Image (cartoon, rainbow, N blue to C red; front, side, top):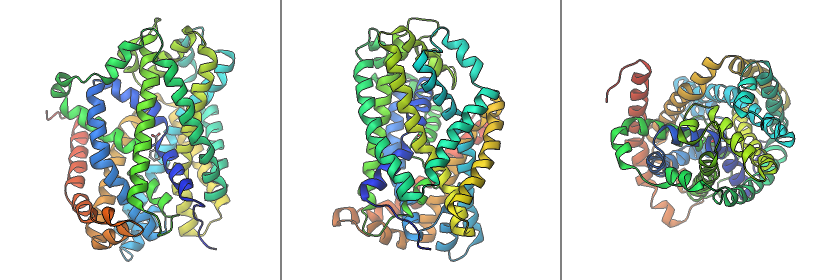
Length: 446
Ligand code: PHE
């Protein structure tokens, strides 16, 4: 059986942007921004996207396109059969399952809010509503529904499933977000939200530099879908004629644009609320507070209800286009390495995540640990592994792959890119990992 490939360049780009744009932009980014000083966080985050994210994205693309395999198979083959490197790739495959196990729970919340927006079910008392549905059996139910939608796309394969779905979803998301941002920034009180988001506060940054750095690094990897092998897997369905560097930059720019745009919707609304919860304190109160404050905002603003339908509809689409990229990693692994049919592989993994996700949906403590700490650590470790692999195992071959399909300007960047992938980028990631691990163990260095 020949391996599938993307139908068009645009199809690949939209699928990769679809993976990148997700709950990370709309839910995790405002949560992290609010907890880490607003604009101070934004600046550090943008710098890391540019300096670490884009080269990291290209490293994953190089591994994927060169090997035409899932992450585990890719590292194993490209290292001429090293089991240890295969294990590094497999770590990515496992991370994808861990990630999907919490992502699908949040996807379920969103799905529920989308449906409830039609009737305004949560408008009366947003706080109580969220408290009643966040964990427990209702959360399990919606997690299963969201997971089923994800599986439905993945089972269709690359062209007829993922490419076809994301080609419709991504333009819809962008158009609707622009419209929502136009509405949100003109709400009364929006100015306070905008200045929290956009006015740079150097004092906060100086006082909390390492915390901000750690959170921004984790968020930058999360939002670009790095460190798991998503981009390895998606690029494995690419041909040699692609200019990886220009595709990668475009993907990063589009993802960042959508992220910033989502901030323009979320922050004005958070500050425009005049109810039980307002301002950054509410947004910073953990993963659920955003739902509560936003739902509160929609319930109080004119035209709030129809716009809530649009808003949560956009997030459902964004979340789905990301969750399919998570499920695709282990599916590709089972198909490539064990010759399973796509249908069988998808069914088996859906059953697995059904169970692991339900554990998160039933246990808030577990959920918080997985969604916040564990995922940051796993992504950082995973990307460090991929970079060391590209820098030291592929070496010059990586530059050849980087250059294939590229013009002379991009080619001339190859050696500098390889140097950074060999040295400062893995050091930066391992440093972040060490600080985060120490913080987890209760040791504070700074
Ligand atoms: N980038 C996605 C988001 O921002 C999450 C994601 C992470 C997807 C890692 C795939 C792999 O929501």
